[in-house]
Length: 492
Image 1 (cartoon, one colour):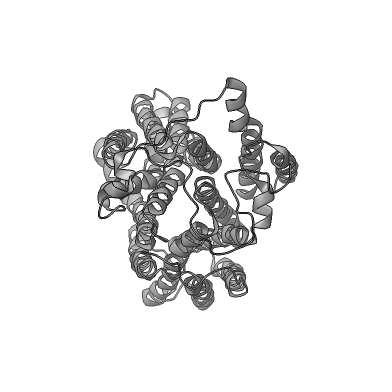
Image 2: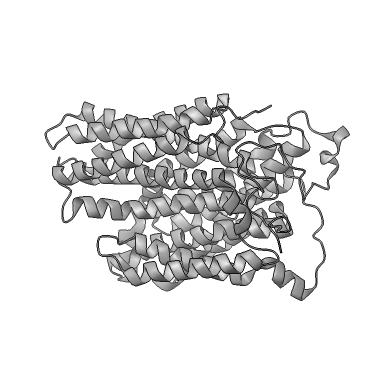
């Protein structure tokens, strides 16, 4: 099969940055999708609200659990290492499931997979509430990872489908809303988890998924048009289209890599070798698969999309390393309590949200990506100047620059991906964007470990700062010399 014959869910046929919208493969079959019956605002809140809600369920579950680990450990008489598995299992399942759910959306329709994911989340909430031991609770968290992973890639596919049907360009405000919603829920998750666990016990953190899932399910039925009928296939044909070997190889490669990245201070090189072997096998498999999970031929030719994924990894690596590294340093070296550290970080979150709104409202892409790298470098520069005797004002300034990095990069990378993929490719491509963010987030813990060693000292903080300077410079170079990143994403 030649490259021109390959049909897969990821990667356009050329290394281009901006492209015309492709006709949607899964056109809506409801009357609302007919030209004469289109709503006056096809991307209004009735349509986008359930998609926004669904896409926030993964980040909010990721952060809420941190406040309940001590209580869970006490109830089940488990060690901190065992309860920490509740965090890692969600990350691992999410990293694998995001593009897999995008693949299923291509085959069965994004609305069906979105609703299926929400249903899995509902089941996960019930399992978590009734869990008699830590093992069952881990199953619940795994189900939460799988269920919530269906929401973001399918939401992107549904938005793309509606925009293409309505003749809309890049829906900048809608994409901006997704970026902002993810940031808000990630920040709100920690205090919300504390309130719920403190008031009702840790099982409330699992119970809250039940009404959220029901709301998302109901509003999706009311506001999102049905998918076209699924094309009938034989059992053998369906299994071929699912590409189960490709999914298995991808899962093995990603899990091996994530576990390796989580402990770079004491690296398990056999895991790195295993990840390389499995990734090689995946490439060979996908090159010849009839319906690959990842169309590696097309992805190999789409350098612009590859660079978007790399920028996403670097942005997540820098953001999480800065935020958690600085937080740990402020508590251990400066002697600040957790509440004070949280207050110092609040301006970071607020500025990120404001910047993301401004950038998405104007659909800027190129300059925000460059400014994200510059802001990160400046933040690292301030980090080099601080020590355990520094004032709070200097710390706030450092975190505000980091907020600029987060705000500039979140929407711009998402918009770049939207421009670099077709409607048929965007579900898997969006899932891989989230996977790239997980790679950066998990790698950040190792970066912090390497910089700090046994304790979060001034020397360790400055070592981390030099690492961030290198990352910031790489982000600037990746965008400044990339001619396929447009200045502005055309929108309606």
